[in-house]
Picture 1 (cartoon, rainbow, N blue to C red):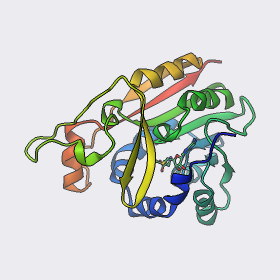
Picture 2 (spheres, protein in one colour; picture 1 turned 60 degrees about the vertical axis):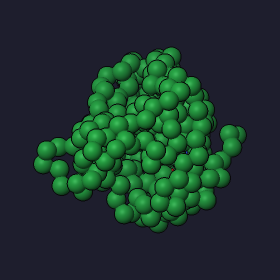
Picture 3 (cartoon, helix red, strand yellow; picture 1 turned 45 degrees about the vertical axis):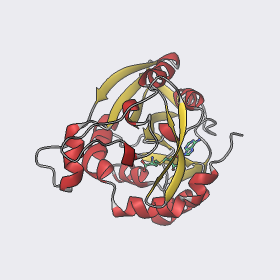
Length: 241
Ligand SMILES: C[S@@+](CC[C@H](N)C(=O)[O-])C[C@H]1O[C@@H](n2cnc3c(N)ncnc32)[C@H](O)[C@@H]1O
């Protein structure tokens, strides 16, 4: 079996606290897009790969889905079970999903691809467990935003935001830290991700670079940066059938 991520295990309490404080990227930007791309989930069998402490699985369950939360970190799964015992949970890495082939209507990969060391195998597994006609919805960081390890070195002057980018075409591992969380994140060019989805037989059906609504009530500092540069993309891949 692929190695369980000790860094995520050690950071799990800090991660739970940061999720509970509310991440503006999710709350003000990505949740709405991911739910819309997921479509009508009532009665659907969904696997939330790298689903962490289960926040998005709970959102799907409250909309009538039958989610299974897959994550390698025991304490995150335990937190999910305390919050919502009805949600299925499986301790596993995305590279080896203990799920029957073609048994899922929907796969969710919500900001987890940059955490999966062998992302090509992870994407093959997502495609394998999906039934023909099913979809994978993905939220990911833009690849131009992951070439450097720390957000603090990415921004330019206070007057104008610039993103620093280097070694774009390399696949790199970075140690990253924020809010007491210390984990490994991986940078890959966008084409590496897309080639992995395409070579798994999937078709790109939707692609969005979410931007805050003009009516957004998000904190001003976050809005200022989010309006300047799309830090994330979201997309939906379809398995033919
Ligand atoms: C940034 S968190 C995202 C959690 C959740 N999807 C969300 O958006 O709140 C990344 C998650 O990936 C998980 N992870 C780490 N290595 C993984 C692997 N090899 N396969 C699947 N998930 C992994 C971590 O345990 C963590 O829960």
